[in-house]
Each structure stands twice: as C-alpha cells, then as structure tokens.
Amino acid sequence: MVRVDTLQTVSGNVLKQSPVPLEGRAAAACAHGNCGSNMNVHDVGGRRRFEDSEFTLRIYPGVIAEGTIYCPISARKNTTAADVIVNVIERLRLDRTKLYVLAEVKEFGGEEWILNPSDCPVQRMMLWPRMALENRFGGEDYRFLLREKNLDGSIHYGSLQMWLRVTEERRRMVERGFLPQPPPKDYEDLCNVPDLNEKTLLDNLRSRFKQEKIYTYVGTILIVINPFKFLPIYNPKYVKMYDNHQLGKLEPHIYAVADVAYHAMLQRRQDQCIVISGESGSGKTQSTNFLIHHLTALSQKGFASGVEQTILGAGPVLEELATDSKSYNAAALSSVCRTHCVMAALDGSGHQHQGYQTAFISSGSPWCSWTG
Ligand SMILES: Nc1ncnc2c1ncn2[C@@H]1O[C@H](COP(=O)(O)OP(=O)(O)OP(=O)(O)O)[C@@H](O)[C@H]1O
Image 1 (tube, rainbow, N blue to C red):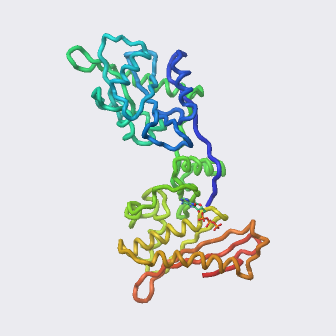
Image 2: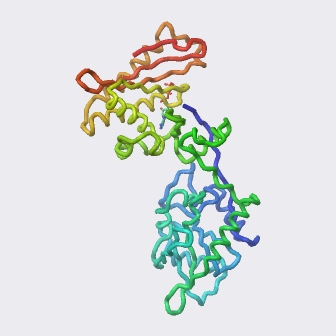
Image 3: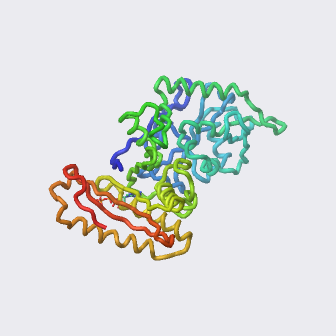
C-alpha cells in the first residue's frame, strides 16, 4: 500500500484563435476552478456543490463568429438556454436581428439536440460523463453549439469543416503549451505499462488517484492508495457487481480480490489467504474490513447475520495482543510494517469460515510476532 499525502491539480485554459479579450476573462474565471474545463465549479475545497454554484458553459459559435473557438458564459443550474443565448449575442456582438438556438452535441459530427428556450443547459451538462465535464481527453465531443435559425424555422448548419478546424486548433494550442497536455493513458494493471520504471509507475498511480481510482493491479496483487476520505464504491451495488468475476475484467477493486479468493476456495476446496501489508496508517485495517464485508456478503448472500461484526470485533483485541507480545521490538517501530491476513476456509462439511490474523514485519527480523 502506498500513502499519498499531497496531490497536484491541472491548470490552463485558452479560448480563441485570435488574441481578443475573451481569453483573459475566461482564464481569470478559472483561477480557482478546474481549469480547461467545460464546467467550473466555484466552491470551497474543490468539492462540487451543484446547487447555487456558478458554472462556466462553453458555447461554440462555429461559423456564426469565425475566429472564436468558444465563448465562456457563466450560468447557474436554473439559467435557461434563452438567457445563455442573450449573453452570447452580447459578448460576441452578434447580429440581434437574427434568431439563434442552442444545440447540444454528444458526438463529433453527430446529432444535434436543439434546446428549447426554457431548457437549462447546466442541468443537461450534468448528465455528461465526467471526462466531458472536466474537458479531459476523449470528452471533447460533448459541447453546446450556437446555431442560427432560418426564417422558416429550420436550423442553419455550418459545415463539418468548422469542427475539424476547432480540433486542429486545439491540437496546435496543446503543442505550443497554451492548453494542458491531455493526461497520459492510465493502466489498471501496472504489468501493462509499456515502459515500466519508477517514474511511469508513480505517474500511473498518481493519475489514477486524481480520478479517485485508488486501486491498481500488479498482476494479481492489488495496490491501494489511502484516499483518506469516503468513496462511494463499497455499497451493495459494488458487492453485486464484483460477484463471480475474473480478476481484471472490471475496474480494480478490493471486492474483486475477495471475490477471487472466495470462488477459488469453493471451486478448489482449498483454504485461501489474502495478505494485506503496508506502513502504519496506509489503510490495512480498513481494507481488512472491506474484505471481510465482501466475504460475508458473498457467503450470506444477503442474509443479515452477526458474523461480520463478530470477526471485525475480534480485530482490536488481536491487535492489542500482537502489540503487547514480548517479541515485538518497539525500538524498531519506524521500520515495522504490520500485516493483516484475511483467511477464508471450508470445514469438513463444506461450511465457510473466516478470520484474520495480524503480524509484524520489521527490516531486522522478518516475523516479530504472529497473533491470531
Ligand atoms: N479505502 C479507504 N477509504 C477511505 N478511507 C480510508 C481507506 N483506507 C483507509 N482510510 C482512512 O485511513 C485511516 C487509517 O487507516 P487504517 O486504520 O486502516 O490504517 P492501518 O494501516 O491499519 O494503520 P495501523 O497499521 O497504524 O493500524 C482510516 O481511519 C480511514 O479514515
């Protein structure tokens, strides 16, 4: 397990092809948001509180305003498409005698969904995938376009060339350093990193951690980075999702490891053992709890029982015993690494039993104490 204390955020944003004032304003608007984003949430501590928050919508005018890639417009959850259009007309000094509509696009060159004047773009944008909201690589296809309405009510479409120009412009901006580089592809299994060295390994873990992916495989080993905050990835939906899946088929998760051990035990009729190791505070106890939770859920299949609480309740007692053990060398505390060992076993009649042990490993003597 790895403990990560500090993380960095990405930054950078440019809006126009020519150096006209819009760019400076938008960059300032991003000062404490998620820069380079379709959506900026101006709130404290990076937490996304959608209610009452101000978002930055990027409106792509296409051929209506040649030279402008997009126009950033501040909007709230209840701001209507009509309000946004009025704002864009004002900022881009467009012809007020013409009629305009907002179109939502979710695919490059794909179908355009024309918004009604009373529709709220921010609410539609919240349904976009996260990579689109954070303007990450692969999410650029999601956007709002400004379209001109013909007198007969039909929509005046520009050519696909405009899309291509915008994309090409974006690529050149990235090359010249005006836009952030798209983050490198991350790997769910470090064994698949093409050029594996310390840097690429840490970069991969960091990149995943920034996306709140705290689990990464190294073959059949699972690396966990302690997020020090609650992540909604341990609910019954996840228990069900990881039930009876081959390791690596789904996003890495501690439930996947528990699941593999459980089913290997049933199929091979052999005891299984999962070793959890890491420095103090890295999340061993928490991981043990998640493992036992999943194993109990699998064996009980939804029937409430006190088994999980009984096993978990024994944990602190075992840990105390281990800490008090005579063979435990307190002087070597700094180099001590405690190990949890979760076991699942079948008895003669085929019933499943679980338990866990705790051990200390120090650099001096590999196994100082073993209690359980
Ligand atoms: N997966 C996780 N999700 C959220 N928070 C976590 C997770 N893992 C650990 N934490 C947080 O980190 C704290 C420390 O974790 P934990 O007690 O499991 O560490 P430990 O390795 O058992 O430490 P020690 O060896 O000192 O007992 C927990 O109290 C919890 O707040």
